[in-house]
Image (cartoon, rainbow, N blue to C red; front, top):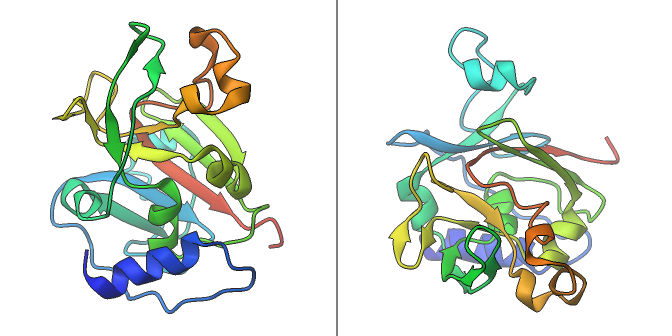
Length: 197
C-alpha cells in the first residue's frame, strides 16, 4: 500500500465525525477476486451483479449496482493486525492476522457513520448483520493467515471476518462455542447500506 492510500485508510479509521477523504479510483484486481464490497460505496471498480456470471451472489440474493473488489495481493498490501483468540473448532489459541475490516471499507469509500449497516456473507450463505459502530467496537479483522499460513479455501478461508473474542469481556464470558456467531469464515461479500440513504 502506498503512503497516500495508507493515510486515507488511517483518516477514515479514526472515525472523525463528518470527515471526508478523496478516494483514488481503484483498478480492477489483477488476480481472482476474494472479497467484494458492494452497496453505498464511493470507490467502485466494477459494475452491478451479472446474473450469468455472479452465480453464487445470485443464489445468495446479493444485489448491487456497483462494488469494489479485492484480490489477495491487494488485501496483502494493507497493514495487518494480529490477534490470538481461542477458536471454537479446537479450543486452542491461534495467531490470526489480516487487515482491519474498517480499512477495507474505507478503501471502498463506504460511509463512515456508525449507524451504517454492514452485512457480512460467507461462501455457504451464512450472513451477519452489524452496524459500522459494532464493527469498530469489536475490532474486526479480515484474517488471511492462521499461525503464519494462508487460510485455505475449503477450510476457514481464504478470508475470515473475526474478532479477538478472548479480549472482549462480553464475548470472553461466553462458552468458546458461542463466541464467534458474528464471525463468518470463508467471507466473500460485504454489503454496505447508508442508514441515512
